[in-house]
Image 1: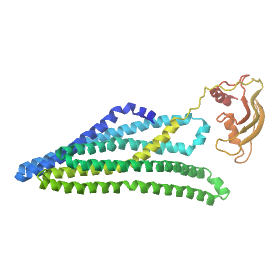
Image 2 (image 1 turned 90 degrees about the vertical axis):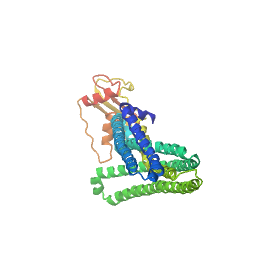
Image 3 (image 1 turned 120 degrees about the horizontal axis):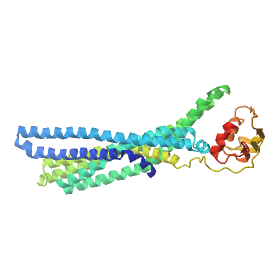
Image 4 (image 1 turned 120 degrees about the vertical axis):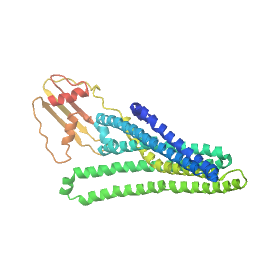
Length: 412
């Protein structure tokens, strides 16, 4: 999926500035526990009201700067995400239009529509969250660990153990949940396909009394979707309670060890308060990260689905067609033409032969599913015949390329 990174080209500045402003916001937040520690250890014991007010004013000032910086980071992150998705969607639309019809049929119209709408939106959401929140988490986590190390290297070991355990939990959950979300996206394609077919064939369904059968088909795919959504939701929901469990156990250990160090004169109350604040900051960011992983997993799956379309080979309109012996009279010649759709088990057309001179008209009649539209698509060379021979002649010449063939069809 590295080829998708090219769409950041026009929004590189915004992509960089978003995380940079998040870094500034994180720096302001990391300074707050130290100010509170100073307030507890130095200012409050002196009972100087002016110093307390000044310290609280500094906290409000930091909070104000943090709000401004956060809004600015949100603006740049959103601009980069929307711009990336807009450019990618344009190219994806052009790519879909340039695919051969047999490949579009093999993937399915519903799947292509889903990739062009839902998947691109999920990518946009993922990029925005990544620039705005995902990069903030490691800044706060590692920043808190560094600041805690300056206060008490011994108690910081609890922080390191906690982060290692939580990282392991998130990685394991991601490996479990990713295949589930991939399955859900495929079921979504099936659901859109079934719904689209039912809407398009509503008159035929009513005419043949197939309402109950079609309703059962929809219930089946909907039930399948429900089962996989519940399964993915159960695994995803385990991340938050596990994170709370690990962090709260670490919090108890830090408070216990901190109280021991205070009794031994190795730590002050303000320092312990600062350590607890850093621990709670880590808790907040890891909870966000745990919830964020689910959204990023969905975005990753969507990006893979979009990349699959970009990896397909486009239809070459200048591709040379087999040379045919030119005829002066016949404009279209079909000799024992047979055709089978890519996913079909039996031919849609079989043994079709006719010669049509220029200026002549050919009427095709038949019931639904008899192959009328298929023959027209073969004449337009949207599909290549499976067996037999289909030739086109115009003014004593046969088309050399696919582009010429389609241009001549309208003339002939």
